[in-house]
Length: 327
Image 1 (spheres, one colour):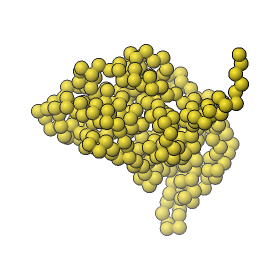
Image 2 (image 1 turned 135 degrees about the vertical axis):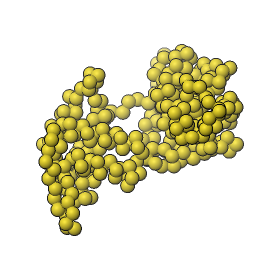
Image 3 (image 1 turned 90 degrees about the horizontal axis):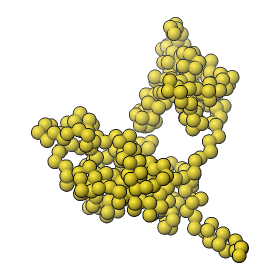
Image 4 (image 1 turned 45 degrees about the vertical axis):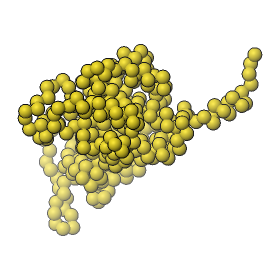
């Protein structure tokens, strides 16, 4: 829909558009550059803010009112995409988080609109943490045939996900020169652009080394998509060649699910399940919550506390002590 751009003058005599389309463009740049968020986060914020424009039109920011937000929330709750999918409560919350950030950005620029604190987020009931037992982890690893190059790669991926507690995106972004197999520790840049150390077991380091021994290329990514032929007679260290061959998060999700099925595990297993299993294993073996928080890269310890209800040995001891036996 066409519109006539209306501008307002600031104290320097310059003009600033207050329409959503112009403000959102600047806001996304602010999120990525000033706030240091990842390009993925910036793309998601763009999607969420585009939905606001889809609902309200390209209106001036001052026309965002509590009543408009109420109707927008109702619209999100009833939203159905072209594939017939609705928005989950969590996803609806992400839209509102983006809107609150946008309103705070407007406030910083003295652009008239409503206070961000008026945007309440929907209550979200966290799903129960799903993790693998030690026996299930062993079965998962044993389901991989390491007699092939692909098998060596996949075994290294599974070991690294479990041993390092990494997010799948963090694993896929690793380059060969990022890791130190001798020290079995290295730094990664995680969610929110924050750096944190990763520590891995000797077994994980050995499996990664076994995989790298199969590589004859000069490509930078630690893990490659083997569906394409590796060309060793070209400039393999070029950026385009490296990124074209980098293993994707979706590919890792598929291979984890495949080996879980092969192992006869009936749970829904994803790369994040291995991250949950990593945290649960640490806590069950006596690690303190703050240390686990640091190793997971959680900004708030409240996020890490989702694991305590399944790992606190004191709860079981209390139950065993006070629960009467029924004969």
